[in-house]
Image (cartoon, helix red, strand yellow):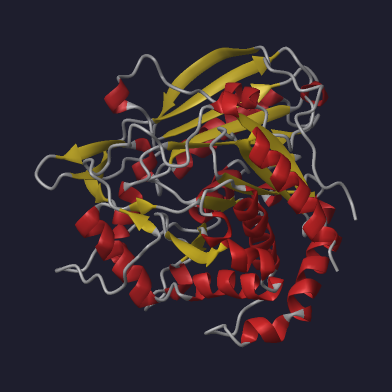
Length: 460
């Protein structure tokens, strides 16, 4: 059935010995309009950076210097339709809301080198904290209130391979719009190639209604008592890193097929309680399996009577009326949820868990999404639950076609956070249906989680 889990590789290098050779501001290739851009209530609570690294093997026709020149030009070109990425976030004192000042202040492009070869740095799937060295974390020459919203760093390895590190403020892009940004960046690295997809930048389509109409209770959201746009002093799902064990659990396509069959085998029991026709998809069965393991690994005085809530993201673009353009650049993802007592998770049929996960996504209608956005207008809310599943599984970053080829692997730079479980694709593109489940938990919980993860894949 394949490898179920692995810990940190012994060969992982903790210092990639990266030297920044040059760093410069890059401006839009054409003059852009100076303006303020509205940020939706979904964007407002995502004022932090998301960093990804894209590893490429050596290509004799495209040594790192040529790649750096092409990427720099490509970035300048995409900053015309993505003018907001060359701007800065500001707080509007009248409205108390964050906005983007599209002032062409520039994005940052850095060139760096590592003393290692790409093959020296170990397993690319394992989220090595040292990968953070492949992205400029902060531009010291720029004030903390004026930091760029987009940074790209091209780091060459001794073998001729290289890594493209990208940092963007999450308020600018969600995972799907970031993928389109990469498609456009890749297209502009070619000679005389048009933009792959024209981005849709009008975020007012997700503005709150006036007056706000909160028509659902939204237990998946937590009221914030801090000004909107500011981060809480204790991040959601946070835990001191030294207290966490960290492991990768790999689910092969055979494992996922087994879970789908398991959901079908007990289907009638779930169908009797489901309010919708539930979908047995790869994501739904993996989420149900992880939810069961996570909930039952947690020690609690309430025992099996404890309520467990799993959160997961749903793209609302096709669910709105009318649907949002697929190229909508802002954050168009809201948090779905499923809740059950631990007793139900332990004793109930697996199909019922899959049904609850499916129903959580089906709940996200146009009216529910509008209600959640209006809830944010009233309460300045933030996702709230026992744990969050963040899926990078099928975003397809590794499918981007650059002049120098596709990435060997693409991944986010992971910061260990308690109770955020990530789903990553397999490094082998031929195993598109396989998934890596990245889990960070306190030691005793991890032991229970690992035992359950294995046992529940063997149960008949």
